[in-house]
Structure formats: C-alpha cells, structure tokens
Amino acid sequence: MNTHDESMSEWTEDDAARLASLPRERIPPHDLKRRTLAAARSAGYLRSRPKRVGLTIALAAAASAIFVAGTLLGYALARRAAPQPKTTASTHSDGLASTQGFRINTDTGRHVVWY
Amino acid sequence: MTNPVDPAPDDAALVRAIQRDGAESAMSVLYDRHTPRAYQTACRILGGDVQRAEDAMQEAWMRALARLDSWRESQAFGAWLRGIAAHVAIDLLRRERLLDFAPDIDASIEAVAEHIDLEDAIAALAPGYRAVLVLHDVEGFTHEEIGERLGITAGTSKGQLFKARRAVRARLSPEPVEKIQ
Image 1 (cartoon, rainbow over the protein chains, first blue to last red):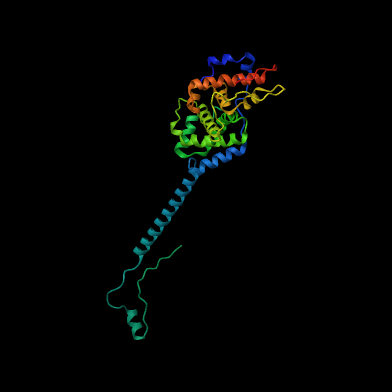
Image 2 (cartoon, chains in turn orange, red):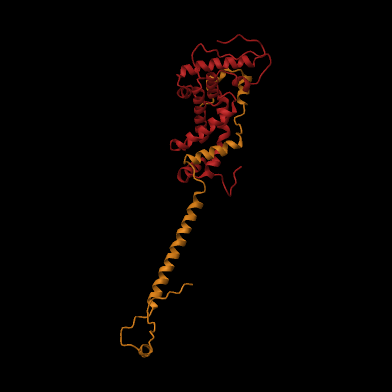
C-alpha cells in the first residue's frame, strides 16, 4: 500500500486535507464481536477455556487412578493377611462339635474390611 | 501507553496463540485492536451501509482465521486484515452486481443544492468508483493491488479513480460544474 501516490496531487490542497482528515476508524457494535467470536468457535478456529477443561480431565483421571491403586493395594494386603486353610487332623473343638452334632465353621474365606 | 509490568502481547504472539491453542482471549485482543479500522474500510466501500459492513467484517474475520498461516510477521496485521475486509466488501458488491467498470458508466453524483461533506460525497459515488477511490486515496492501495482485487487492469483503475475524483470534487464544489461522463 502506498499513501503517497503522486496522483494525489490531482486533489486541491483543501480536498487533500479533507481526505486526510477522514476518520480512519469506526467503532463496530458490541454485538458484532460476540457474533464473530461465536462464529469462529463453531467453525473450530477457537476453543473456549481449553486449559481449564484439560485440567479438569487430568484431575479426574488422577483421582480415578489413585482410587483404583488404593483398592488394589487394600485387596492385596487383605488377602495376604488372611489365615491359611487347615488341612491337618481335626482339632479338639472339631471333635467336640462333631460328637455334639454341631459343625464349627472353619471356612477360611477372605474377610476384607472396608473403611 | 504500554504497561511495563504486563506488556500487551504483539500481534504475532496473539496469532500464534490462536493457531496453537485456539485461544479466544488472544482473538479478543486482536479483534479489539484491528476491527475498528477494517470495519471503517468495509463501511466506506459499501457506501456507509453499516448492516452490510457488519456482515462483511464478520466474514473478513472468518477468512482471516481460515488463512492465518498465510500472514507473515513482516506484514502489519491490521493492513492484512483491512485488505481482506476490502476484498469481502467488494465481493458483496460484485454478488449484488453493483460493480461495473464499463467506460460509459456515469461517475457523477446526482446534483444537490446544498454543500455536503466529503464522506457523503464518497458514499454517493457509484459502487465501482467508490471502491477504487477508497482503496487508493483513503487506504493507500496501489493501482496494481486494486486491479488484482477488483479484477480490472491497473490502467482501468487509474481511469476510474480520475472520474471518481472529478465526481467528488464536483459534489464538494459550491459552484455548478459540468456533468462528468
């Protein structure tokens, strides 16, 4: 662009001065900005608050990972602490129970306590 | 005046933020910084029709965003955007078949008794003449650039400008002037 074209001399001095004094800017209506930004968003040129959305997703993923890790750890510890099943001769209490027609529960199933 | 603690980011940084992150905040700053000038250009080319100028300005931004890669940092972003806005405004006139550069088009403005200002005189020109005069005398485009945008030769642009100026001067002059053909 060239604002000093020699053919500008075709204007009279007054006219050239008037031309130079024309306002170079015009304030557009505020609504135009809102419409333009909305159009740019829907066309995919802009993303609103990209960092905040990313941060939320990252925090949710981290919280889920911590929860799953804690669950697995608790499960493993509970399993390790559980008593081994008895395969040797019956104990005194077993014998006593059988003579009395009762059966003592010797089930060695896991008992996980959740807090 | 620039705040030394929090300097306003330059256009290149804002463009990169839009390209990289689609940063709306960067777009907002660019919009506020450059839209008033480009909007004025579109408005003048469209003869002061603010409604169509708004449509042109929105379309200009969409085109600018679509081709941000083609903007070079060595080029002033505002001038680049103004060029696009002018192009969109010219496209609007062309779509409405208002652009005509045939040599027999009357460049004159209907005679009025009272003195009018320059802005009105420009707005009253036929659209093709108005576009050439605004692009050359107000926006500073060369005839070659105007020819490229309007699809005419540089020589035709010069001829149109000559007639447009005479028409505007006639309109501004208090004395009766001969009709320009």
